[in-house]
Image (cartoon, rainbow, N blue to C red; front, side, top):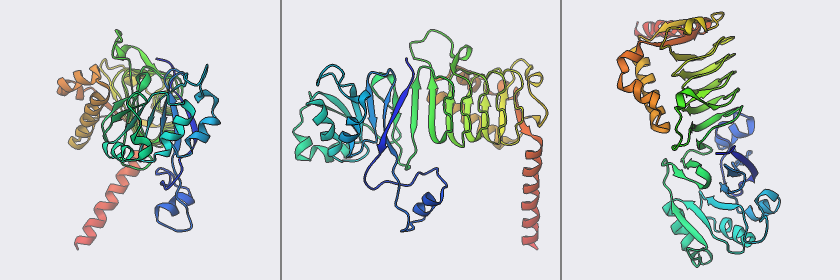
Amino acid sequence: MGRLTAIVLGAAAGGGFPQWNCRCPVCRLAWEGDARAKPRTQASLALSADGERWTLLNASPDLRVQLLATPALQPHAGPRDSPIAAVVLTGAEVDQVTGLLTLREREGFTVFATAETIAALSANPIFGVLTADVVTREVIALGVPFALPGGLQAELFTVPGKVALYLEGDANDYCGKGLSGGFMAVRPPRAASFKAEENIVIGNVALYGATGGEAFFRGIAGERFAVRNSGATAVVEGVGDHGCEYMTRGLVLVLGPTGRNFAAGMSGGVAYVLDSDGSFPGKCNMGMVELHKLDDPAEIKEIHTLISRHHQYTESAVARRILDHWDDHVAKLVKVMPTEYRRILAGQLDMKSDMAKLAAV
């Protein structure tokens, strides 16, 4: 599979929500219902796994204007050589479809939408007369992954702005850079003959500066994985040198080997490493962190759940082995905790305990 490419077409028109993960004054006012702030909308996007066939997400009623301004999405050799293979609709705005048809001269494509949206569209006189050879209707459901052209997968959520991205293939450097919410999972192609846990599936500096969201990677990451991570949760099956460098917040679970200088400058958050051969302490930069075994039942349960989800989303063979022999593997998990960060958390717990005692007097 080739490199995933995205083109931002513009703001999706009509109604909409403020950016759900943004904390700027305008978005805060909008979420609080302040009349001075007009709601923002998420951008409409075009995605392609090969640069040839495109899927439109969150299509706007202004779609026709957006496509006319985007050469990559216009017919290449003639009016019936359009690169647009599908459109994913989250609302029953018929202009989103008819605007596309005017550029394609009634060339067939697929509409993905919920049953309710397709029913509403079909009741529209314009959309209802379109035969199956022009528009193929595919019913999708909230929270259920569905296949898109080019081997991509997507999933609809009810949370405003929450995006789910499934990639079956590999990804280049900076995969997940600035992740600030939502969900992503990367796994090798199902037909691949190699072992994912022995091969690199994402490049260097993945999740650079992430502030939120979740990421599951079946395979090994390159160098500087989760550098400056400030809030994302990630599962990966091995990392190169300088993993979790300058991390300030979030959670990273490594189900395989690490390179050297792990946790250099790590001042916050927590990492867990499956140290199968006992070599991890020699690869960890102990300048700001300390290592612990897992002994808290609640924490152990949380890690078990995270590994179970990793298997659910990526069909990881590593996760399956760990879950099948849980007692053997949990004893090999090492918790990496910044020293000062642990002291701060302990102080907060002591403060809560003291306040509870005072309240009981």
